[in-house]
Picture 1 (tube, rainbow, N blue to C red):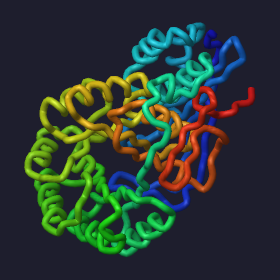
Picture 2: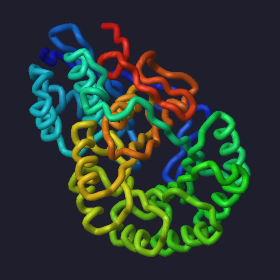
Picture 3: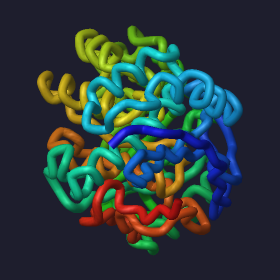
Length: 357
């Protein structure tokens, strides 16, 4: 099965409510999808999320990277030679990780279809179901409390609370949410690089002293400040999750060696796809570090690829794949089912989508 063509298309989905973090506010998902065609008529699908504040990519840059660099590098290659394809994909252009991720997941979709199996089984088949959290956007305290209560009513037992825009009131917002939802709901806090190391320690200790029982705090300080990450990890009891600090296996090894975190958030848009994500998962597992699978603002297309990857890996014990739940409607049918907090894998080949040529 040879690759014969790659085409880009637009993926759009309005959000139920605006998505607000310390870095940005978004009202509508506007991503780039890819189709990878083969000489046997099979088509693979993938998606890239242009997150300029994190990966440096835009929709135009993603399309340019795919059409100008990625496509010429892999046209004519055999799908079965997946390691060689991924080497060419990685080396044809520097960074551009979301563009690479879209093509990577489409290749894996085809690879699993070649063997008539769902992708999660081809990759390892560790589990069939996942439980995801849901994001509570950064707003005023009352709005965040109301959004948290709505999420719990929808069936979510894990909340990922966005903070970092106003460090002086972040702790009070999280405390208010805990009081509103009660002790049985898990709360994760994501500062999106919004705090200084000393602010982070002060805020996290305040939450600890108030017995808020936070499961983890994600990326409390700037991604490049690994010394600051180490300082926060060393001076708090709460688990610290590295997100923007880890794009690659090399990054993962460095944060582990520096003891700059307790766990690592893997996102396909950061790693460049499943092939590189597996390396991070294996390095972390070898060093006793658990991983989260996360996503950017993505639709069911690429989130399904992340779900297949997560379902295949024992060491991915935390799931943040709420992208489809934030959208008013899905841009595609088939694939894993997303029902409130539950993600259940499909037994259809590949990613499980029905694609018409």
